[in-house]
Image 1 (cartoon, rainbow, N blue to C red):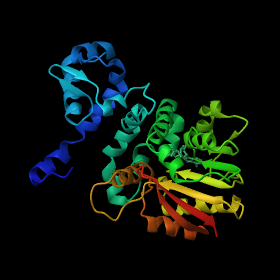
Image 2 (spheres, rainbow, N blue to C red; image 1 turned 90 degrees about the horizontal axis):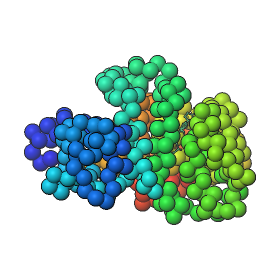
Image 3 (tube, rainbow, N blue to C red; image 1 turned 120 degrees about the vertical axis):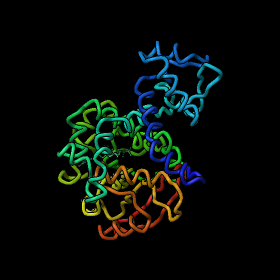
Image 4 (cartoon, rainbow, N blue to C red; image 1 turned 135 degrees about the horizontal axis):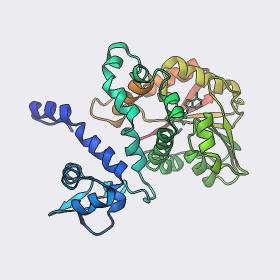
Length: 330
Ligand SMILES: C[S@@+](CC[C@H](N)C(=O)[O-])C[C@H]1O[C@@H](n2cnc3c(N)ncnc32)[C@H](O)[C@@H]1O
């Protein structure tokens, strides 16, 4: 929120990183899991999760001031947002909060000036093999990342299914589909469709349990491996991970694999024309710093599709903070 007082604006933004850090640590500790419907003191919660009572109380007080948990005198209880930090919540966002606290994120942002000076991903200065290799080399971080992708989808998949008619597609490919959360939801909604989940080998290995007679798994690198021939291609938050050159290379490879009737669906948070605060602008900085990617406007996505031999046919706002850009094989 932009404060009316300019001193307060600078103050809040300069020191504001404490707030997300409290969220990451509280999510990591599992504080929301230790709290049920009965309000508890910070001392009780600290004993349950192995934390310092006073320090935890102060972290929770700050979070509660921003709507995550609530304070009732000297006790804490759940708010709608803190319930989402519970592991057992059907739409749990705990892994999503934990992902932003991973060391690879914080080391990257310590080096963020490198990105601003050069336009290159700061991650490469701390982990020269880059973000995806880091996840492959740090399996626990990779698991948190994959779970976070599933967690963020809790907020978007219902909107995607409501906004787009997937009937009529025989084979749906989810390219960079992670653990297959979107593809599985599409196949559940369309019982006659089959799917192929394509991702890097370590991600496909972790997703082994989702394979079925209707859902096959394909491990590979989308810059090198043969891509499946599908009636529809889902690319949810894939193109934003990459700079323009790599994005065009991915789309061109899909175009070459696709039959003429295929649809390519880019599912992305579009940068709006409105200059006000928007999640797309936060995501954009993460893409810059971690990956050298970018969050794009509709016009920028259209230019990438055209350069790749694809033709933007429709933009569908799902109403869930993410849009579907439907492209045909030109
Ligand atoms: C931002 S995640 C998006 C996951 C999923 N589509 C979603 O939106 O929840 C990007 C995905 O691309 C995959 N990926 C990255 N580089 C890849 C490559 N070279 N080939 C195949 N998949 C890749 C990652 O493993 C990850 O699952």
